[in-house]
Image (cartoon, rainbow, N blue to C red; front, side):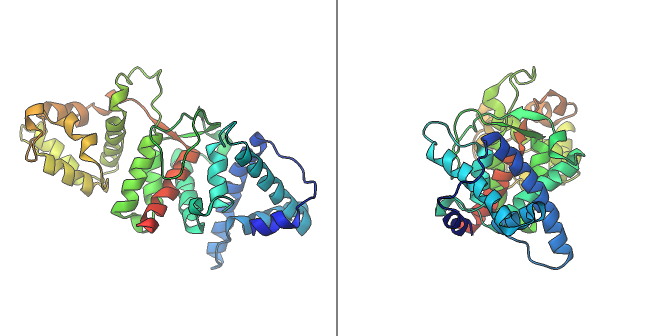
Length: 326
């Protein structure tokens, strides 16, 4: 649909839209799409793809099909301008992701409707868990560049302000949104995606070792699973060590799987929980290190971490996409 609209309005003047205006409009469109999807589900109707929804959404506001289509074309023109100027200034992540959902991008980067559905469900769950009903009630965070490149090239440098979500809320909301609770592939991709986006504020006095960020990200998720009573084997492992028993690498790996933290690279945690002499395949975990990081009061010693709302949407969609690719 987007290409036919571009052809229809080719050569016509349409209202210009700034990047700031577009980013605000994207937030409003996501909120309206969630509402429209709920209505479609209640009526046993199929959900509309993003482009068709936008025309219908603006038709209610503008009263004419031409006026609605003109508004969509204004958005497309802004995206196209940002894309053409990409060498001068990177396209904001929020706009890049929206263009992928709108299928107004390279074919290999398209995110189909099922990916949008999962991403918006993760967004809805994250808002509900935060007790927030509106986008603008959420705190703002200046997003930083992700630590590692994703499957689709990400804009470098500083992103625009976006709503912030704790990594615990982001993981739980996105995991719940995955079809069927997620497979090993999708959960692994989700973990890696959120981990590379995770931002640990430099002014947090608990953030004393940035090189431990990946490990701290894992610990935050594990502690959250423990809090939700969703990690019984991890709870048993900790209790065993507290009672002066021993725990092995294999037991910890199995406890992660039991908590549905799947496909995690051992390199993230193994060297942090094992003494150097126990790094072999059959090595034991260090009792002291297990208690330091997972025992009573250990959560209070961990730094806080957040991802932006757009990063949550990106990681959620890419997690589903990874399973489709496989």
